[in-house]
Amino acid sequence: MFRTRTTVMLVFATLAALVALPATGAAQRRVISTRQDAPSDATTFLGADLVYAQPQGDFSHYVNQAWGVTGHLIHALDPQGIISLRAELGYLIYGQRTARQPLGGGALGLIDVDVTTSNNIVLGGLGLQLMAPNGTLRPYLTGTLGFSYFFTESSVAGSGSESFAQSENYSDGGFSSAWGGGLYIPLHAGAQPLSIDIGAQLHKNGDIQYLTANSISFSGTNASPVIRPIRSAADYVTYRVGFSVGIR
Image 1 (cartoon, rainbow, N blue to C red):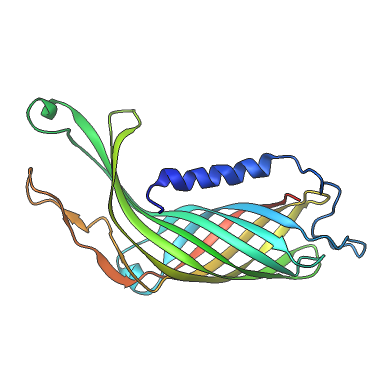
Image 2: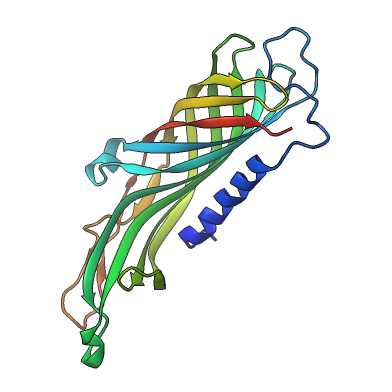
């Protein structure tokens, strides 16, 4: 299902392409507006954010922090955008290390490669957003239900080159929820309004098995690595800053 970072980044590339497309058909509609004469048409927004995640509870005993990106799609259910449907998708890295080592035995021992192992989270959810009906600043609350997918993968690359081999070492996933809020700061009004989006969410992931930098060990040159997953609740708080733009 969500097996590699390549798949995740293709999703975000698609979202970015949608933002770049000019509005058609609905370009003359006004999106969420504080004016009393705003039309009754529903509005759709697309947003992207840079994210810092701070582990909570048991998760904080094994992981210090995570960084990544998230995207959201919002569809307003009323003219002022007080109640909206909200879909979210995100990708976080909570650990990464690179080791320089020989490619193999015999003649391959003359070739050194970089082996990079990364610990990742893919998250997604669907829920509601409640926003203040008007004002220069637009505070909002969100709640979503969805999934989280924790996976660790390793890749091999030569000096200054793209990876030529990749393998998933371990993965686990399950049900998750996210609750929080934020603030929209308008930068541009009109048919395609643009706002800065600042917010935070608490992500509840329940019982998950995952790897950290200390979960993989090697007992010898020719022996297979020993993998010891950690099992715990994997809750964290995300802090984000990004943008939201009306697309129709």
